[in-house]
Length: 450
Image (cartoon, rainbow, N blue to C red; front, side, top):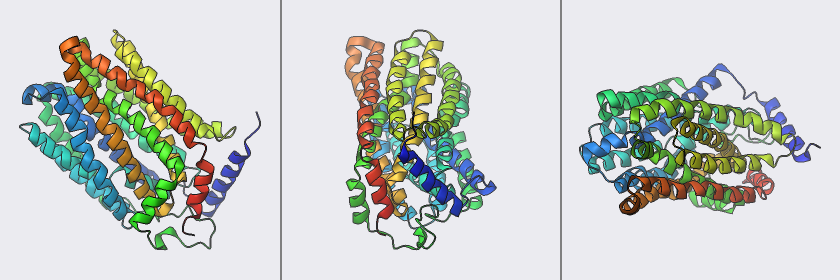
């Protein structure tokens, strides 16, 4: 098959950037990547810990399914989404590692305080404030990572950072499940938050802030991004809304998140209710499977895409679209199997496909975002993801469970999750639509305000 000329041009441009500045695997960049991966892991783990421990918390505090949907969705996501924008504006002007470190420490403190909750409103307060802290994590980390590595190295670097979710599933989730079985759910929150606060302090004191936009200059004479006048909020927002690639990718990813978070939040509760599997057993079997498969998906995604794009650059849209379809099918395997190991296979395939797709989406977004507003752009993307996906997915399943429970009893959760699983497949066509506009939007981003 002939090599696509656009792939040759893209490789040539990236090689030129690489020649001007290393942006590769130095001790400093590897250490910073390791710390950002840990931030990503705890961002994911602390946020979803309540879904793992909900059977214990529900029994202890007498909560309903709808209340869990509110705690994992609306209450957390509202502040997470809207705080992301002002925090991103600060991060586009000030030190990103300080923003990340302070945010990590704060949400870890809220994790500790969650362990002291005595009712729904206590949980709501700590979840609300946890969302404010976590808003500092992913947008700033994505922006910082793009300035630690040049375009040739970014696919692998992004894949490694996103594999933090797999680290969470492989190590943190099984540990949390067994600690909760033996010492109670509150102890899990106290330990997780304490470790996070230590790591936040370590990041603040040992990681170096990279030069902003150092690998995005078109030529050596161009002024560094860090020295350019920063765009106003209205100008930044208007630019992102004009980028059609950004709009379609955001819509596609939001639909995927509806499916993914509904499955992630309610998966353990589904196994407890329908299959009478304990939280500890679920965590010890599914945690490692999800972790290993997720790690494999995250680490191979960038490598596979790089090889495929030598043949045709459209694979950067085709590959995540295929992943979306696989996610939906894997969730049906999880929901309609009776054997624990077949269920584990479904969970593993889902984790593989999701963690392969997520860094590929980030790589696409970076191409259509100017470096001056990259943190803002990622925050706006996460705002849309959260408002559509994080809120609608878990809350919809909770509401359907409470509504269908009178008809189907414990089986209601299976049918509720079946509806959200189908949404992942619907996400695919919007990703393909985004591909029609990438080349023009990437050129617009490169030339913005030049």
